Length: 227
Image (cartoon, rainbow, N blue to C red; front, side):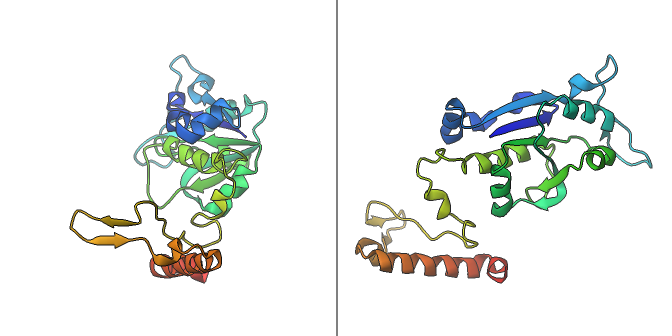
């Protein structure tokens, strides 16, 4: 999978994605990226990329013509998304869609956002990572990339892992335990691993995990149960 990042801060990539599992996958060429400096496509000597908004208001807006220049410089744009708090909210279903795309171009806005006309002209999808506002689209782009990269074949080592995680089946994931089987916490409370997980009966273990997933989802995210 290849990512194109349209950004004013190309040095932010790959950032944390150059480490750990995603970093190893990058070295193994399971994914790649190109960070395009939007400012390189400005039309004046000052490399101006923004201007005041029509209609007034605070802040500045990134220019449509400059962004388009950066977009058209790509030999393969693939699917194009713009990180925006008003976009389609990112969930596991959307991540799976994006991860199936050979090339994903992500536009990272700054200031008050981008001129609507460039989004309309190129049918750019807006995607949000949640109901809050960041200083720019780069941190959101890193989240999208991370979520996609871990779904690529061979990245996680065990492809079954991603099928048992939260949201993979519409539910939150069940609790996990490891050694020691009995542990005394800092308050002096003995905390033991549930007996069913120590018994070796895989049918009972699966049944217990399913119930835990249902109970956790019902108590913490009842909206998922309704959905």
